[in-house]
Image (cartoon, rainbow, N blue to C red; front, side, top):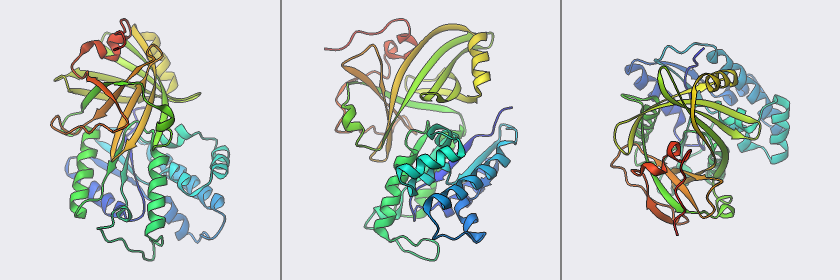
Length: 358
């Protein structure tokens, strides 16, 4: 059964999620989508009379259990190609409010890994808290009880908790809420493929990064193994992505439009579906890499490290438009852009690896 794409809205207090949920539902409905909302489980737990002053682990476990139950109800609906699930926060948000030991305890209690909790969502959109911008008013209330400094800390922990999701996007504080919501809508439309499912990406050959420095940033590493195949329907790529034994499986089909733009269709697979397609297609090549996902300056950068290179790597950035400016972080040393160089396509490198630059 093909599942409905599931996206998640997260962020710190004062990020505008309440406005965003209604706005997105109305906008996407006008585009012909059926929108299923999964409301914030923490609010529902509190409405049922749960004592907020109880230990954090007990409170977050109750929230996570309800989250799983609510998601299971919509996950069982078969995708008709014009539906989307929008979650108001998700399982990894419990990480924001727990220390390391309690977070490990909740994972053991629920029998879930980081990947199970984070990458069950096809895309995550972080709405930056107004507390991070001193020029924007931030206020507390009956629901939003955190002061500005507490809200900033929650916002930062939220950024770290969700980093590593395959499609993670940052929605900054804007001059008006309407501007912020329209920015969010543009990102959601791009993810859903409205009007077309396009991948707009630029790739740079860079000097091998300082991995210790990356570890100090909002960064998460994923191990990726991808295999290129062909069958009677054409070429496709199968990707296994995760950490250790905890992985997700994705099938991707691409069609080149320009050097920067490709039409791209991705489908989540079960392990059984992945193995079946892996065995049924004619293998054209495979490649493995470690991907460091870095959220920096409001941009989600992907740094790919390969076992056959010791001095260089790739930096990839996905864009909304071919005309978008790419800002290279100061900790990255670019050798050259290779967006248009076919030798540096992952598929080409399965069979012929370019020599390292000197």
